[in-house]
Image (tube, rainbow, N blue to C red; front, side):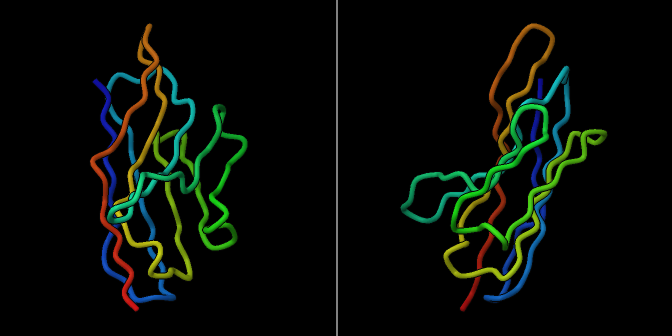
Length: 120
């Protein structure tokens, strides 16, 4: 069984920063894509930032480019999201997402989510 556990959410004023962390644990053969999604109140879940399979390239939502940075620690099976100059539009639940191979299966996993609230 594989689990993704997020941490680092919280309440911050507009213009502030937060760093989210996500660690994968369990029966892991290989982590393919790994990244972050968010879901605002009454909105659909959307991609924020993600590493492609192999971890060499990253993609960002246009709304967070140059303010958010995704990084990855393969030795720890972890991914991080540094969020700077936050705006109220960043408020929502942030979910870690990963495609992980375990022996003979390839599955998509989601973390439980961590709340980020940006106040004006």
